[in-house]
Image 1 (tube, rainbow, N blue to C red):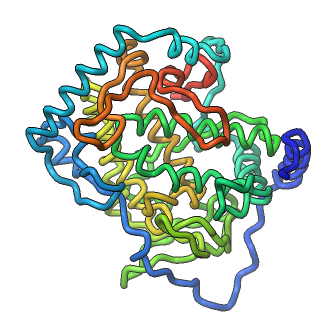
Image 2 (spheres, rainbow, N blue to C red):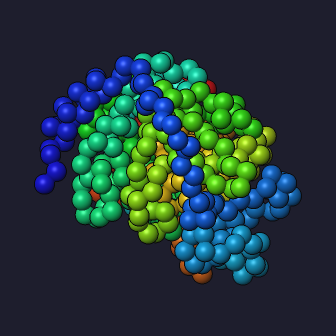
Length: 397
């Protein structure tokens, strides 16, 4: 049986207190860094900025085929697929017209003083002591026991998060709930840090557009924090991370849907990181419908950010194994919030496909978002407004 939340919180708080001092990198070793074959990790499917600008985006949530995530290459939608999306959108509108009170009740769960929300600070605006406490809380999760079933491959509390993402991959990517689900998932991560590891600071985020083309120089990738953004080698290999807060980490969930021990590795490609630009983000956010914006962001800046860091981060199912995953998805959520801020109606409407069936099921504000028991299930409608309900946060800019 897992320790009670109260006991874990006390133990976690002690762990954080012990770790908020500047983290010392491990002693250097007299050997070459271990290299990693990148073949098992694959990559996220992408759309280039030029394709995003020139191609009509209607129906992009169906562009990925009807199989499991990543099994089929990106291809333009057929007329039948576009008709499926039209039907789904019509179904969504009809459903919204007759919705019961469940969405309203879900969105109202928890209270938020919109004049005094939690602030998420860009890493450059985040105090050094807060940075150290944030990283230490992740270390605390990595030192805490797993909940066990249904996370059978997980060997610590952090890997429970990895397992959720791995097991739900096909339900949360290339579908319309991609952005709301990952917003909720970041919140689940935050609550585990607060409830079980005593983290009591503001939360950070990472503006990747400031580092596009030079991720390696980002202030996150230092020996005090997330370790180096090691470049892909000349012969196309990754490198096990041997310095920083997560040095010499063995991962047990993944790659892919399988599970085998492997190191935390990176293989940074700065050509890809340069694509994570403000111009690409702004182009996606210029789309007026949710489904067009979502698909552009998912295949665009989101996918390039994963692939640019490479290795573990480029593997769709278990990319959470690299803790930089959450900093990346805080960036993705920031871009989503910017799009929402442009029109208040975007806080209460959504369109697109909730699955890859043909015809697909329309996403609605009542579509359920699950974290497999890490925290209670919620709905799309409950997380659309970050200043409403239980989320209660905004970004510093």
